[in-house]
Image (cartoon, rainbow, N blue to C red; front, top):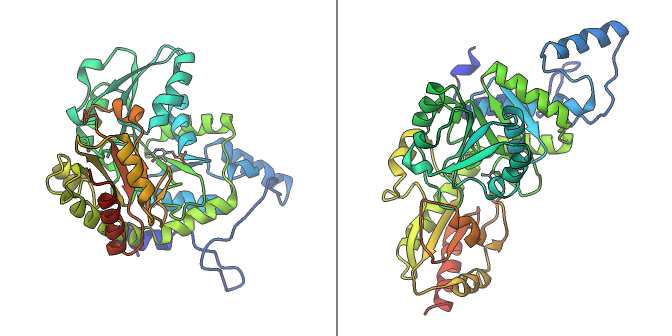
Length: 396
Ligand SMILES: *Cc1c(COP(=O)(O)O)cnc(C)c1O
């Protein structure tokens, strides 16, 4: 039977199962922990090392992972539609790996201005020290033709963007990158690979913080990179080796377990987020709601064209009658939304978007505070009641 003909929801459940031994098998692949890999003979030692040297995805040492890691890579490969997937100890390390693998001193990189904040705050200074220059651009305006230089090697995007979820025309960026012989890398954390496949829309590399929806329970840190380009996979793998990036087998197992329920969790998060977004649109204190599934969101048409659904993130901007103290009082009043960074777990979260990060964003120039909500799996009417109560208590 052609496994490829199956729907994604079927395929991600059929990959990474335990293998039969003496006629029986566990459902999921076991957690295989090891540092040393033992070989049956010197001939096997040499054969497997040769295989690895020639690019085979086999482990000759624990740092390269085990059957548990291979199973997770295969499942993420199914999600991303990718032939090559590498794991990293966090989303951040996966992103840094892309920059360090693909850029050398004297190169120039184009970065969307609404990417995950630490890219600008942590990675850009590292690149500057290495003599690599970065230029930021407004992704919603399309490919940054005017910012292109002869030494531009990489375009780095994230769609929907952080905090405000603006959608970019990724196929147009793919065409732009190919026209100029540069690599297009996309942070795909928002979609978890379930809702959107950057590689099918023109990106060369797709990156995820599997910390978020793939983990799904706020109890692990992990990242992944996927590509269909063998030469790029080779470069990424070489730098991955040099940095010694490794992921514990227990965390690989948890991420694989998260993938089994990813589709049903995301559908529920999205239903709750849409209900909350629609409620927020009716609140007097709210000037604007950001969520691409809302028909009046500027990215709605691109989202409908390129995505299979939405996730649990919704942000809103207060009206000018409200300042940062109102926003802080609002989140402090909430009972069912914890305050914290990150998202993608089962629980609801609220965070006042840091003004420094929003200032870097060209999509929405406004000086009223923005709150980011992550709609968890709690009952949505309880969540909306909690929000309603908090708005009532800060009424101006
Ligand atoms: C959380 C996040 C990251 C970083 O992932 P960590 O696992 O926390 O290092 C990167 N990109 C996006 C879009 C994220 O939301």
